[in-house]
Length: 354
Image (cartoon, rainbow, N blue to C red; front, top):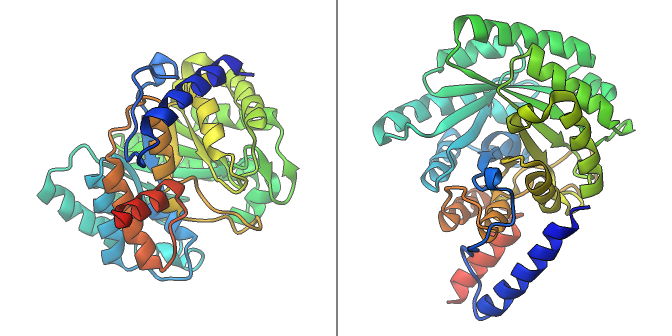
């Protein structure tokens, strides 16, 4: 469908292969971008500290290690970091120390002059919002999380889709009226398929995307392939439906969030960037996370892999790849596991071979 882009990509890949075959590149750059001019800069939303660690339940990650991870990511150039979630510790014990993490980040940010780093936290209800407001000097953005599948919504947050929208509206109304300095980010999950209901209709996704933008006043809406089954063809069909619903002028508010269960995440990201100009990408350092609903799920697409691909396309992310890989290696050691990032594995191995 986007044959011309792939032909150009093949030509550039041949150049890159012959010029770089002697050693593993840590940060390849192209002189001619393969993406639209308006997508030549990409915003990476680093979701590892929340969406990633939330699903890494085998090891309890301390406040200190979470703060170290987040500060390492900031020092690597990550400017948008999802740092935690103000949810009930009964349901998500891995996020129980979010308030303590944010308090420490408050001091760190003041001491280190990282004014250009924005932290986001998931806030599912008014109780969560109350906690976020207590540390609002360091929480620049709150996020609400909905689903495009009725069954998933019921199993995940115990209410229907429309009931969840009403809950979120209560949260966002308070933010708009009393804390307008806080941004509102929306998540819409299961945009390709649901682990219980199967494929999701693109028109359902489009309708809910329009509703979340209009009713909840989301400045940004992340569309998530929660179980990582989507192919570029399915992604294109879904995004075309969303574009028809929200209009071309609102496509700049979209972000994409792909899990990599079937190895399609990078292809889906490239399609979203190249064909639709979506330049906001969610990813997780070291590919942290997982999907409890799909066997063999490998979790979020790894930030290292996304940055490597984008740098190879001449796209600016503002992220230092080597420092990013170091961040992934750090949290992998804490968790006692191998990084899920192909780029991270290769660069670490290459470093130790020298």
